[in-house]
Length: 428
Ligand code: S2G
Ligand code: ZN
Image (cartoon, rainbow, N blue to C red; front, side, top):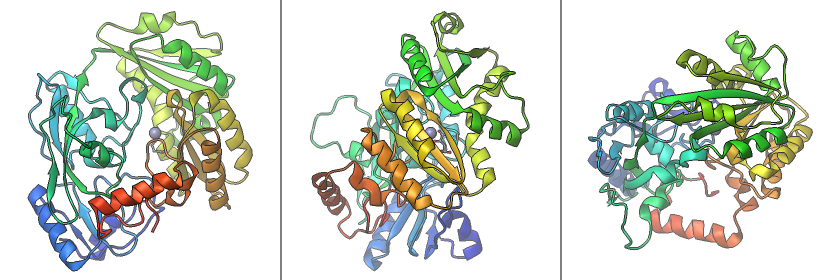
């Protein structure tokens, strides 16, 4: 248990610095049974609890807002042996993504979901937010990787299973209910995860286009490649900021409006098939095969987050639209954001944009406009970061009254006293 405010500060402020709360105390249980004991005691005293993994969340869903008990899962970092027959592994909720991938690699396997916060994000938090990241177009989000979840209810009872049966048709999907639950239904203590092959060869290309619709057309053509794994979009304004922040040269001698970073992974070198795809709208192409060149191309995309953060505390709006409407959405956002520095980037194959604005003088209006624009195009107010407290008030844009009644009923069924992560996902 930690009570010194100076020590607790690292747990009560979110990664972007936007959400700063206070905790009655921070508890760091060592294992599932201690989590159960902590929750039972908190339940007895009616103390609200905020579960936290790597504290890399971006919607205020993992920090206390009203003096709750902060329950850190980082010490639950045990990894079970890789089950090569089932291609699955058990991981404690506090296992960092990078540690999971290293563990899988030792058995010639890999984990499907990859995100830039891989050194800090924990698998429990990634399940709780249904994290997506850089390889969803080929492998799906965390939901598709979960073969089982073990969790502790607010009253301290343990539920779930880590057997990882591929077939189990015996009622409601409790594990599936916890994916994306954002710590509001139960505290995830361990997960059973599916693993994928660790492909031997990768080919990465940076493609330049005149507009987003050309990049979307290229994705349609590239989808013919079974090895296609990533298709990430960023724009010239963001690239210029990244090059200045990292003090690196731009990828091409001439600036272009839109960039698409694509990556293929296979056991046989995918460079041929990648090079064989007709991309009529491409204005320039840089292809990388060796690791250093690949990392350079990825830096243009992955350094966006740190670059935006270096400009100030960003307004970060992770949204999704049908990919066919991505260009329309981009135009709407550029017209709507009239103050501050707008930086757009994201996962174009899934229609997932990260709308970042630094220094805007009307953040509430921008938030409302961006979320309504996504909803109006048949999209979502959160594609992969979750709802948290940041977007709970806008859930009605994409969830009907009947659905929100069901959310409230599900919350009451799992957490009758409303002790877990109050105000997250479901407005107070
Ligand atoms: C990404 C990371 C967080 C952000 O880079 O894909 O999900 O929005 C983001 O800066
Ligand atoms: Zn993302």
